[in-house]
Length: 152
Figure 1 (tube, rainbow, N blue to C red):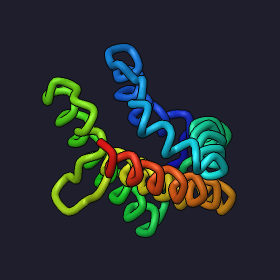
Figure 2: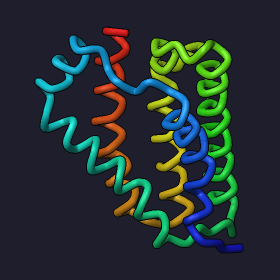
Figure 3: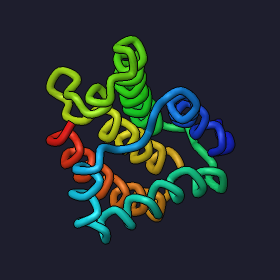
């Protein structure tokens, strides 16, 4: 079975859209100053964020083997962690620190889980290029979120 990669964006995009509509996204000045010192990494994160949301539109997802089923399971676990983090945030009155707080033993789950999700998708799409894009984005995104979490 194969299907368009556009469908993999919907589960990641929905909570982000809700967040954009409901939340005050302005960072605290001291946090923004610290992040500004890492401009190169922030640029990689910004470009990577766009790439992981655009490239899948051009991919085809395959579920034809045990390896694909394993990739699908990993993607499902990653989405479960992602949604658990968002539910905690929205039920916690949208307190900014909840975006970065550990979820059990998982640091910055709202950064780690989408990266894991997109890596699993790169396996399902048989796309080394998307895997590399995701890895670069993931390194920058997780590192910067860890920096933000130490300030939250």
